[in-house]
Length: 208
Image (cartoon, rainbow, N blue to C red; front, side, top):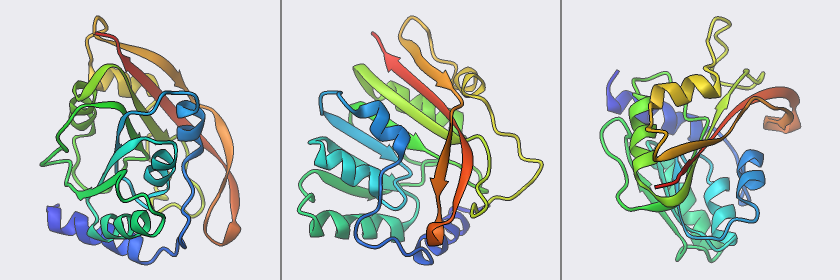
């Protein structure tokens, strides 16, 4: 599948989604980052922009990227509307082909799933190398499908956090797995619908 097809697909997803002017951050981000000193953060697949805006309010300097021009433009507009544009830089990247420049204390990839070609292991490996010493890579994946998810394939395999870590194949002398678990939570979707979902959480810290 081409980059154009992937971008068009995600543009359609975000154009059809009404999020208002206050998109909410992912709970796995807020529980992980609370208490960490702010620095430079990179949001891979920023989507609705709730994570980037929340981080900016916590005094992080955020680079947020998505393949969807609709998502990137929406986030840039929201950052300006909330007076956070000096802390949020929204950029369009096809992570299959390009990766944002810089070094970061935090890189987060929430639900970085797509029906199109994406070498996730290579992207996440590049992300780990973009961490400063002491920085963390937070990868949160679906462990189950919510009723409103775009992917309802009953045969889909959700890799465990340890499978994801094995695919990234980082040197344990330089990177340490701080968390790898599969907690459940009640998620709220479009129209206020709720469902119990499973998250696969992988938190890696660069130690050298």
